[in-house]
Length: 358
Image (cartoon, rainbow, N blue to C red; front, side, top):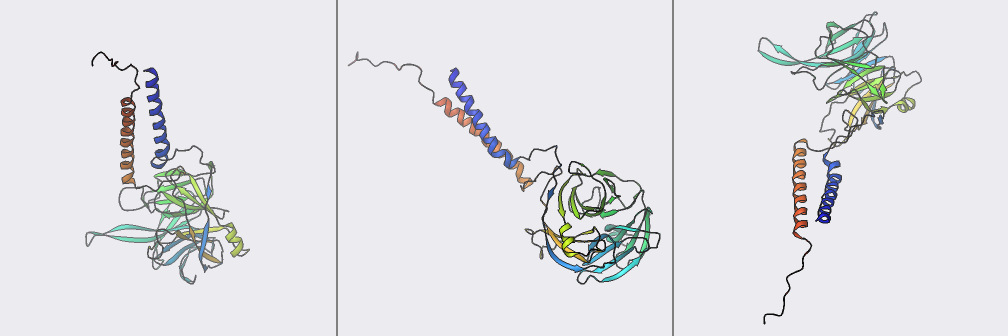
């Protein structure tokens, strides 16, 4: 009996190990790692090139309704402008006063109540930061007419309007960079108090000089760093940088010696009639005094906040499959025990059949 029980237990253990080893990697999330120092470099492809004003000291770039919206810097040369996406020509420009150094720019859309009709209407406006003046400006989207200004503490570097709101309601918030190791999130256009301060970690350590920002769908921000020709993919749930794209060779091959550092990121609005879902998303990039805008395709991997690959499994069906596997595993083990016990080894002699009865 001792030997037979040990055999059963061994069989159960072996089957359990087999089931775990086969199904666990498929339906379970990967183990979290405490080492996030690796930043994976992602490749890119150039799709198209458009001329860029080499006098533009670019600070921020956005796309809206088929137009570039661009912020430029330097005292006495700062502006906000609308640029033709086919020719690169400046269609409309508003110059800042000489005491303001233009910085990051974003287009922010929100729901505006219409008192006469008791309804809400979507309104979009341009927001622009300044460097050290602690003041920002809001412009009309079509005419670039200044509407009002706002204040904030510290320096202003990069700005983007969050595609996924961190607050209840329909309005979206803002991410702001100030050149430090942190990004700040503001729930509304009242920039007096940030609702979140996020430290950015790359290569295992906090990294500073975060500059131009582009908010992406989900908890992601694409950013560049001052004096760096790379873009970094940041998960705002953790602050981890998991992926980067290095454009230094692009600048060396296509740009002038007078061209400055990369500084301008704009996500191309996705049109599924033009960009099928199985193709990479495209972005537009440029830089300070660059000679071109570049449309590039980048295929970022689907990573979680700890830089682990997210398996492409339907979330609604995942728990169903997990539960089914659990049930089948139990049934399989019970069946194994039943088969083992039903085939007992004969331990007693059978009754002897004599020749006493004829």
